[in-house]
Image 1 (cartoon, rainbow, N blue to C red):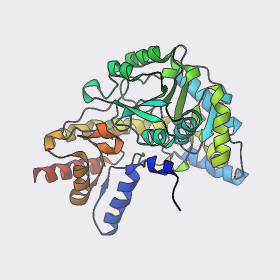
Image 2: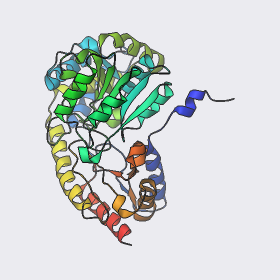
Image 3: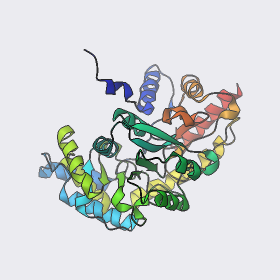
Image 4: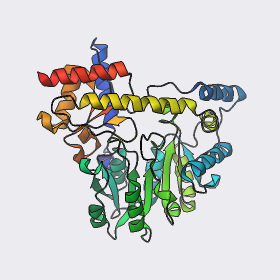
Length: 386
């Protein structure tokens, strides 16, 4: 029995493959510092956990609406309205199990062979994977270190064509930690406003910025009705395992996304959605404290990386990733990442795990303790000095 041809076009997320390899080394008694997985190392705030326990006790264990519980959609609409400064109605909110369905479902609903999608590279690998799976043509936009890992807008203009159906933005970004400057967002909006193009704006790290507040393209005139905002609970509230994300989408996409939910997941777990209400409407201090700690780690970790022979690391403006340039070491990205795991006991990701333009870089997640981060830098430096 042969697999469908579309399966030959689908990619994966290397972080989980490296996690399996590193766990296997740990099982052999090796000491491994985990800087590969992109998830907060903090516990989910207690008031959110308590809300989930209460929901279980109250019987929130059955099917719910495919679009999400009305109370959660109302809370999300309030939050996005307040945080972005745009009017959002609950009817425009779709709750899904994790952020990835808000990549997958709109692409399935909109893309056909011949359509082109402009997306950042290096970037979250699922963008390119899903574009190819849907039969559309991926058009990578190199993220350049000298531009703060933002788009070259002249190149962006050149890549726009009559076949451009979608543009993917991610700010703050994985893996670079870059934030698209407000002026660039305004120029991108000006280039797209009169085109029959939809924007997928991945804002999952929107709360995790350390300088200039990221600007959502949906806030600019004429753009909300042609923008999909992807956000969720995994990063801000350390809820990666709860699997709960959402999209704020134009009206015409609500029914297609709901239909795809019915055909795939039926609904997002009801008790986790009750916890999501507590996350948005409850105390924000735990999230703010976590982000402050990430900033402290970022400053110390990046400074230490810049002392490693052959490394050059820009200070990330958001998320919790460092993306050092390693060209000065003489190594290629994947061989170095593999060697650091196997020989130095530091699990990280090759820049090429995020696309071809990631060559010359590796990604570290600094969602780990300060002691472990400093020990990781010591191990990397010792390995390279050998």
